[in-house]
Length: 429
Ligand code: AMP
Image (cartoon, rainbow, N blue to C red; front, side):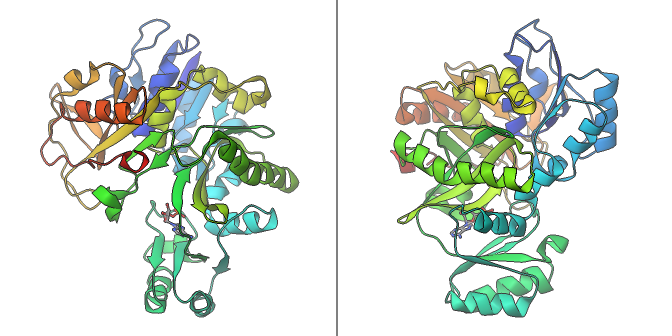
C-alpha cells in the first residue's frame, strides 16, 4: 500500500514511525517531513521513508502528487490543511484520505461554532457567550467579575486564548483581539468563557462517522517552564496514562462528551471521520470541555502511538471506511512519557541550524524513541530547524520508570541553547 503523511512535526514523525511498522505499508512518503522521518524504514521491505518537498498547505500540488504516485491512503497531521478543506479536495478527485472534512474541521477552526454546538447538544462546557461586538463582550465579562478566558474564534497558532483575572484585563483582552486585531481575522468574533478550575486532561477518540473509539487519558504540559510557569507553548511534554481518572470515570466522561457529540453530528449532518481531541477540565462539578481539536495532539500522539498495539493502517482505514465498530483499540500496559527539547528562546524567537549530538546513543536505549519535530539535515549532520526540536519518548513499567527512561535519553542529547522541562509527568507522581 502506498501511503502519504502530511506534516513535519513530532506528531507526524510518530504517525510515520507507527505506520511504517505495518506489514501493509510498502511505500511511504512524508510531505514535507523532517530529518528524523527521513531516517525511518518500512518493516515490510526495509524501504526508506521518502520526504517530499511539498508544504502541508500546498493542497493542489499535494493532490497532484497523490494522483501521480497512486497513493492509496493519505494521512493528514496538522489542523491547517484540514481547515483549508484538503479532505474535501482529495475526495472530489477520488483519492482516499484520512482526517476530518472542512465542515467537521470547524470544531477546531471556529471556537464560536464549537461553543454553539456544545450548548445545543448538551455537552458539558464552561458558561460562555459569543460576540462580534466589543461592548457586549465587555459587559458579559463584567458579569463574570472579569475573571474569564477570552478566545479568538479562529486559528491563531494556539495563541488566541487570553486568561483574565480582572475586568481591566478582560477589557484589554477584548480590545487586543477585536479592535487591535492581534490575531487578524481570527479575532473578528470571540468566545468568553468563565474561568474553570481543576486538572486539565486531553481526551482523544478515533471516529468513523458513527463509532467513536476512546483512547486512554494523557496530559500535556503547555507552559514553557517547570511548575507550569512561563509562556504558553505548543506543548513541552506529555505522558499517558494519567492517574486522575479511573477507567470508570473515563468511561463516564466519554459518555457525557462523546455520545452527545456523535449524536449532535448526526443531527447536523456532520460526517466526523478522524480524531476528536477535546481539551477537558476536571472540575468539582464534573468534566467540562474547554475546546475541541480535530486532529491528533502534539506531543500526545508521541505517547499514544508508542503505547498503541494495533496496526495503525488498519485503524485509519476503518476510520475512513466507517468500520471502526469491528476494531477494539489495544494499548500496552506500559506507561509512556515524552519530553520535548526546544530551541533556546522558544516560544519566542530562536536560532536555527544548531548541530544536535547524541541522537544515536539516546535512540539505542531500550524502550526509547526520539521523535524529531524541528530538525533538518545539514552537511551530513542533524541540526535544529524549529522551535520544538525533539520529542524524547520512553516506555516504562510505570510512569516513574518511563519518566526516568525519558530523561536518561534526554541527557545524551545536546545542542546549543537546548531547553526542556525537568518535571514532565511530575504531577502524576
Ligand atoms: P484552548 O485553546 O481553548 O484549549 O485554551 C488554551 C488553554 O487555556 C487551555 O489548555 C487551558 O489551559 C486554558 N483555558 C481555556 N479555557 C479555559 C477556561 N474556561 N478556564 C480555565 N482555563 C482555560
